[in-house]
Image (cartoon, rainbow, N blue to C red; front, side, top):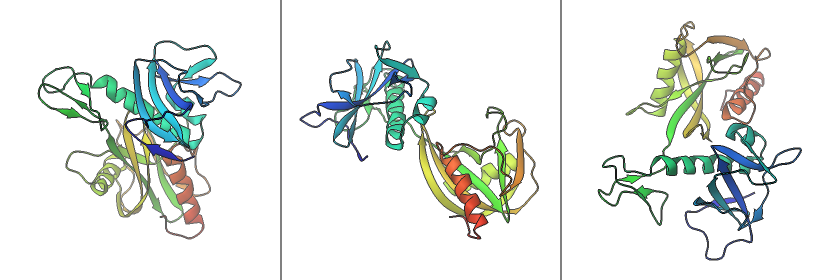
Length: 270
């Protein structure tokens, strides 16, 4: 499935369209034994708040906010809904959620309080009084999987599912590079030092508007001293004795599995 992003729809609308409809912050899916998302007639949903996203395999994609759940549909929390969808639709559901949240939270100018207006040719809301422009917010966050020979450093935060461990993560601060953030967050959360950072990949994470940027990092020294207000537990785990880790739904699930396999194969993590 190929997605082509756009701000304005094409002159001729597709007869069928993908509708990412949210009611009270939850995504509508077709009510079936396995809830899913299907193309529907372009006029299937009438909602005052709608934003064009682009085309997926030549079908228009819309983000909408509705007041009620129509017949034949059910709503699910975004995370659960995304886990039920294939990759391209999962990504678009996250995009739609972020666009709608940006639109909701920037109805008024943050500088002078005037009601804002949608820009015509870019994803932005502009203030007609002072000219301030608000774009969809992105909050970059690093993710770091620390490794040493035969082991991975994994941690769990208090809000994690019972028994679940993951890579370390934290938000980038103003004036900080991604690499600086990795070194700082790893030291703050676990007390260890790292080097040889390698970029792994990134993932848009719409909870509510993060961009996760994942690295591997080689341990160079220090014993684990966890940051008590952030980390419930942190341990070194053998490659063949890993605890419960996130599914591949999230980049952390890919990062941990792929790095563990690389180390088992005698390769340096990418």
